[in-house]
Image (cartoon, rainbow, N blue to C red):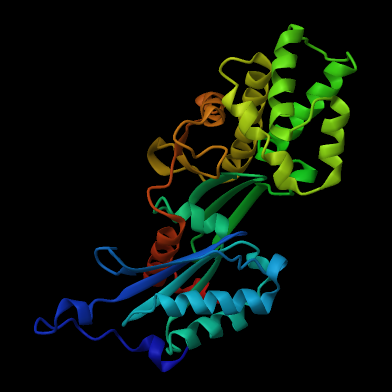
Length: 340
């Protein structure tokens, strides 16, 4: 390792104003639609600078060079003196050339000694509850359930379930919920529903979907589905199902099944993690529009299906970019091996 890594940090002198001597940490949350960065003070974790770009930095959608450029740009815009580490929680993380990205971030900070931790958006989401190991369940358009655990030799183990993408499962995500509603209406029209509710329950759901799509027939609905294959369109129907789940029994069934499927992913990952000492519950951090809203019927269903499991459901306490900055701090202080 280089000299700069071995040199101890200079002691804090009483006569230097705090603003000059305090170390800082930068966090970046890079999602599929926008990129956000923050600079936090090292001791109090107070916000120093914040920046939001309405641009994706997912290399799978914008290309790697553009993604790296945007990350470097946003890091530069929240730059402060004494940055010790940068935590990046990025969608499409595995597609980056890590060395290239790390060098671009250091160049943006004009400092080659800064620790740069490149992690997935899922790990960033876990850290937004200020937890470095445990479970995170993301349910937006698709689903990703990941469990992280540090091993004796300071490495880290990742166990993952779901995240195959909406077309290959991801049961309980927004796409799946929307697709269930459409499929059930098709089966009801064909009169091949297994456990039928009264017809008016299906008619209610059908009319609500027709209204959102601006169509008046099943043929119109089919045309809408196939004219554009974007997953987000099908996922946008999840809102109808969730909002009507307290009155409509078909919607209630879909929401219950969504919770049951999400619980299976969580239990599957939890089984493979070491249990916390003294019988404390494993914590699962919930992220994504389907399960993290203030009122979330799917979250309630998930909790019901996890009841017997000694798994505690928690919501993030901070934003994703604050979580990424905390991750940078935590890994810098405890797990510098993970920089590579």
